[in-house]
Length: 305
Image (cartoon, rainbow, N blue to C red; front, side, top):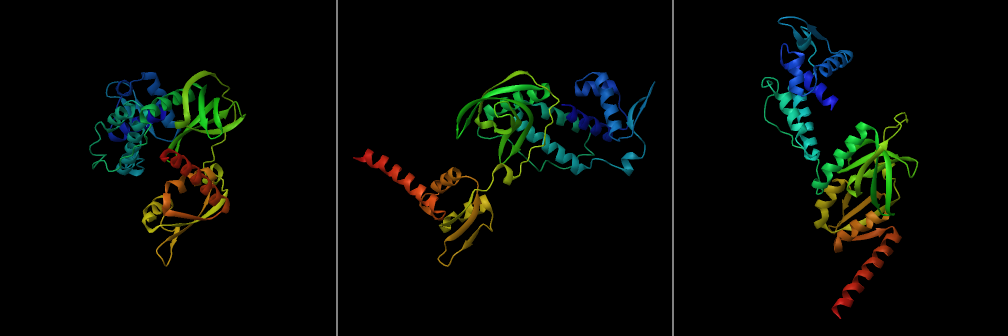
């Protein structure tokens, strides 16, 4: 990826007094012509890079720049490397590890200390997630639509979209693109996608808005729940909603009040808490829980007869 290579070239230039285009081309496994274009892009970005020809010539950052306007500190580089390492957890290959080795080459004075941040962006679906991400990344780069089977509460559908962004949010991976079925931009969860394949090129001139990933936009509030939790559930409330999400009552029970986006998600959570929670409001959730529990009881009562 170009941005990764530009960061790598900049890192090398910050660490070494001088280098050459052939050396950079070999290090980053691209042509000398590509390196020259990258140097031009760095210059346009405001990095004062000098190139000299002949014996002893090469590529370097203007004298004094490193002292007066250091771009990347040791801590900055640690953050960049942590980010690259996290991408390898879902890339399905060692591309980012190789890039880290190139950035770290000869940088013992610039990058100090041991790695202190470890990020794993994979999930229980790691084996199936990596090829999905790679397929979608390629489609975005090649400007090709992708077609896939999508599983949602409303049923299974065959979708075709113009992919624009891969997004990691709410502990899951999503692709944001223009859905040709709905004629609008949509967010699709990768774990619900199956049989992803490239179809054909799409018009790259479409105006693409940045996705609004605010909770209020993606998960609009439907209602507010009030529930009493057993004291043993305190850790779960803290983990999910924070220490200010409940009020401890005189009897030790925890009064929980919070807005929620959909009934089905709330029902699933309350059922997972078993007999450790009593829903107070809304009434329709109380009624639905009673109905579900009664139907479950009938199933097991029938098996015991």
